[in-house]
Amino acid sequence: MFQGMGRTQQDLLCALLYQPVGMSIDELASHLAVTRTAIRQHLSALERDGLILRGETRPTGRRPEQLYLLSPPGRELFPRQYQLLADLLIGEVATLIGHDSLVKLMRSLGRRMAAGMEQQAVSEARIVEHMNQAGYEAEVFFRSSGEQEIVAHNCVFHHLAEAHPQVCELDLALIGALGQGDVEHLECMVRGGQVCRFKLTGTPPTAGGRPHK
Image 1 (cartoon, one colour):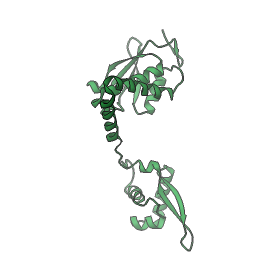
Image 2 (spheres, helix red, strand yellow):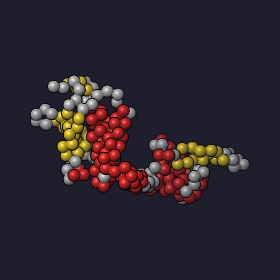
Image 3 (tube, helix red, strand yellow):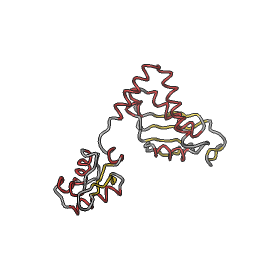
Image 4 (cartoon, rainbow, N blue to C red):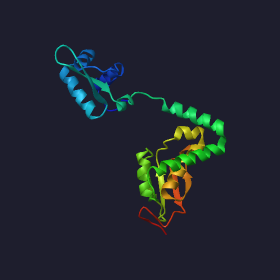
């Protein structure tokens, strides 16, 4: 959870996690057994990265002490059970509404996602940009015939889709809505594929500057 971060910075963030009201430089230096200068340097780096923020100042009878707090992104470095909650929610929804309604719901969510990204049809390259922002690690692949496919190397809902394949309908609806066409799901990681491959068909005459035959 602290990839690429030194031990002192990890310990500093952990210390702040247990002190929600914040800690001063002196308190952190004493707690971590390092110098005040080192604490200042680490705080400066963590503040620059948006992982901590400055809280209130605390009166001491001398110069007020600045308190430092974990920022919301800093708290997100610590484990969360979003996957567990998502599994429970999808399972409960599937039980309540059934297979067909879950498919419709996933398609609706995919179209809603697309509506928040673009208001008109866009090219495969632009679709890939949006997918990569969501973590799909996608690219446009050109077949020898010149046809374009969208290849995703990361299935962002893989764990959910393994238990509930209807979740794949969200991906299809997202791509279809962005390209304003139908989508063929040529290969799927959930079904044993190495990647997820999609092909837009029946798209409008123009889509974000992409020429169509």
